[in-house]
Length: 200
Image (cartoon, rainbow, N blue to C red; front, side, top):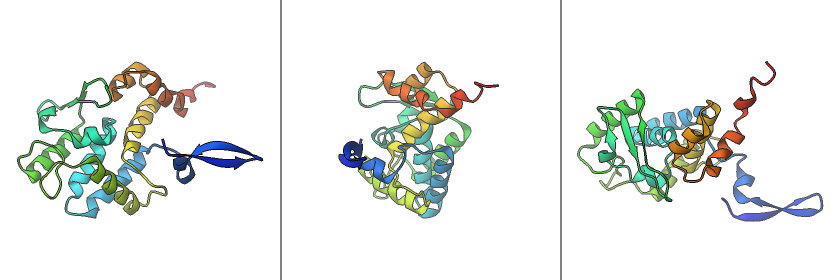
């Protein structure tokens, strides 16, 4: 959550957040994620790494710390499985990976050479959440996303995309690693597509 500030509404003050003053939502759509990946690829010689970070973070609903701490020992390229370890007492799980993810990770492994972590910096150490946060903001600017972006918007985007696709709340809870289902319910409650066949 952003810092709480007071906003004047009709003669009385109402609490709002700093974040809500600069952007109308806290998630990214699939098209925006594609734009970010395209901008990342063109941005630097590390563009493939950056685009792969965005893809994996979005598809698996990873927090920045989970993404930066991802190790090759958690990745099974031959079987297409990702062993997800969650922070904040979240539930670990094993996710299937799509073909484009596997291809991107294979290429990254070839280009990067031997390393324990999947996402390495130019200096040969693991990417840090702080560095990824700054990098992600720069990519958002290059992609001309009309509001400031931060890595956690990938996780929220994953939740909303899967909820809109009609996935069961319990399955979505397991995918995102939520201990408390109330953290998952917000995605299904705000999914507009759940109402699309009501009058048909």
